[in-house]
Amino acid sequence: MTLHDKNDALTAEMMAVGASARDAARAVREADDATKTKALREAARSIRARKSEILAANARDLDAAKASGMAASMLDRLALNEARIEAMAKGVEDVAAQPDPNGRELARWTRPNGLDIARVATPIGVIGIIYESRPNVTADAGAIALKAGNVAILRGGSDSLHSASAIHAAMAEGLKAAGLPEAAIQYIRNTDRAAVGLMLEGLNGAVDLIIPRGGKGLTGRVMREARVPVLAHLEGICHVYVHAAADLEMARKVVLNAKMRRTSVCGAAETLLLDRAVLKSHGLPILEELAKAGCEIRGDEAVRGIFPAAKPASEEDWHTEYLEAIIAVRVVDGLEEAIRHIEHYGSHHTDSILTDDEQTAETFLNALDSAIVLWNASTQFADGGEFGMGAEIGIGTGKLHARGPVGVEQLTTFKYVVRGAGQTRP
Image (tube, rainbow, N blue to C red):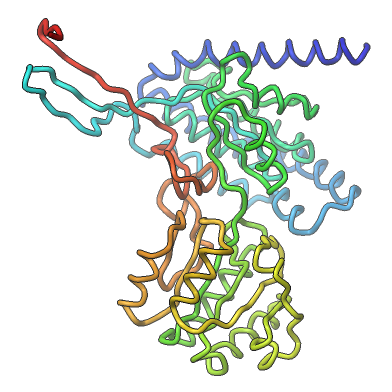
């Protein structure tokens, strides 16, 4: 097969995916909540029943990833175990149990001419979801899209091909059991990067929205090349600010969790800001706690003054999403300097303040334009499950449409339903 023939074959394959997705969109949009709920509950049952098959597929992916020299943080994202498979199935069930977001009346009013106007929630349509190492996204994304009345075209990374394919088989079984078209959740097994390019072009008008979930390289490419709307965050440069009025024991616990619970997630803290007023009393114990847990400290001059083991922080460190056991630490002179640092270096993802001063906390929460702001809580709560949304597709940091965890409700749009009695416009 020549390169030209290969390209033609891929284009034909992807256009067929788009056409079948568009054909399935009406059936999914018109499906009642009981049907969608049944599909997801059956999918969760199938995930549990196929546990051994999924773990065996994941072992193949992990062996190949280790042989290729994949970083430990990325291996953690790729790895599945019994607990993670159960969490995946439970996440699908949690999505199934949520209210149907469609048909909700968002607003309603009557005009002087008698026209009755309602703004009603409705599905977006066909959503292309492009992701990397995390195979569980196959279940999360498929479930959320379906519950919201959308069709999903999923394209995972080549490193998770076997795992994601095994999970997708369980999702397809759920669709079949509920009498929904299997094209409602499709998984692209073709690992050619050109397949992603075709999705970004919209598959001849079939795709209504693209959601990337992955690292800066993937998201950057999607945002540069997409010819359809994109819902994304580029990176998670998350901050924790330890204010002068912070409780020491709480601060130690929260900072350690924010950085080290799982370093590979987008809600992991990447920069710690320490108020100069409590640098020694709070800063030193917190830094010692982090170092004891295996975290590398990169600090400014003031930090290194009390913690000489810290490596010098560069300007680049304040811009960096590490996704591993490294944290950048800076000393600030009060709340305003902390806010200025976050506004300058942050990615509008998730930022937290630790303080017992309510007025200071409210100023922080109101001043920052991040998608998620927290008071006295770990940044690792930047997760749809922790928000009560069940699974999530990602964290939106843009200003339009969805911000924060993208769950079922966030994958709807709206339309205006106008009821009249023969009115005409003069």
